[in-house]
Image (cartoon, rainbow, N blue to C red):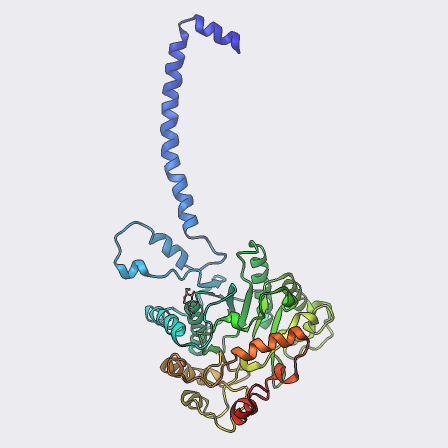
Length: 405
Ligand SMILES: *[C@@H]1O[C@H](CO)[C@@H](O)[C@H](O)[C@H]1NC(C)=O
């Protein structure tokens, strides 16, 4: 090396080589700079709208909207909903979230903060999950829109599967397993913490209430709580429930999904609902679930004149404790064969009623009851009544004198 340099120094070749290197250098410099100006830009374009798995078109649309054009104030204020509503599968099944709904969500966000008699902020990373497949039906599309509305009000997200990932109603379990595993791949401080499964025949009545308000306090005392379920008159109802994103949930949904393979001779009269019920009571899982009163987040409509009873806040004597009242989170049309006809009446009425807290119309507020429930759970002193909620009427409507019994 050094001898070669010396020999170059000696000759008159050096200036020529230097000039040659300079020319080549300038040539490549130009090449590099022109290619480097496109590569980072392409990367930047991708990172500015992170691709969500199976995401829907909004992400792409917003990437195009990035082109620097002077936009009117209203458009530049527009919130990006591509992470709020996430659809899964090739079919586009999400109802349109219109500008009117966006404006209503922003307004409700403000009136909830102003009037709701409880903390409206989410304290955990939470989301909704649901499925709708087949031909769109107005009743269900609008119920899903109510779920999307709640996610928009709270600033959370709704994850909806539009296709069959697995056979029949077992699709629900497959989707939840998929969701949990996807979340578990993310860093712990980014992944969702809790997910509410919600059927497409369940309408959200109270978008002011944060999902976190149903959850146990975020302390190690409650580490075992992974699944929050409720029973209706027939036993477990898996139309609406909450679960923690955890290894427990992965194991649980995996076991439920494999049920038919490992126990082909066992009858499951309610398909995946029976599967969930059977598995959660097994030794390996029974410590992980709790049962709470169904009206917390799975109230049913009254059988007679339910729309008017709710609208007028009538606390009639025959209105059972688990029937939807103002202040309840959800009304669920479980097992109602005429639901696709009845649900739109509710959906219209809820829009008319608006925020029940604005006029102090709420008939039920479970906030204190939920807090008490978790204290009792921790102390190991839960009563049958705290689990079923069946004395709610007696204590809150008939015997208001019995306060804090
Ligand atoms: C309103 O939106 C903000 C931002 O997403 C959120 O922090 C707040 O909790 C929301 N309020 C209600 C009532 O959901």
